[in-house]
Amino acid sequence: MFGTSPIELLAADAMLRGTIFCNGFTYSAAWLTGTATALAGNASQDVQIQITAEADFVVQMMTFNSWSAAGTIIVDPDYTLNIAIASGRPWFNQAQSMRDIVGSFASTQEPGFMLPFPRLIPSQSTITCSLSNRTATASNRATLAMQGFNVYYQTENRQQVFHAL
Image (cartoon, helix red, strand yellow):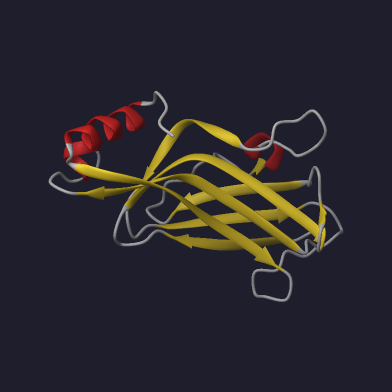
């Protein structure tokens, strides 16, 4: 799914020239009851996403789901999210409401969020997702999905394709 941002246009051009190969992919972070990543009521928990060494990743869209029990989705969770890449680049100036970042499954709301400007994440990067539950109810399971595409370099590198380090 290519859009019209410079990153997507540069990737499309390089793929058409045969210098890179792109493949749709999703990375996710999960907060699971009974594990070290469990999200308790009125608590915060960090989960890391490790980008593989084989390809860069371009995030185009994010979605989020949370369940209070198996099969019982929380329609509009009162959570905040902060995301940072290990290189020290935060995605936001402060934690943001989940509804502002990924929409909502509430009636008449739009789930999922196309990023206004997709993000190029270098291979081997670590993304830290800090989720805060602002309610007294623990989450049974919460999942943040980052959807986009992997970039496999054939004859050019990241600098040549995206003009970025």
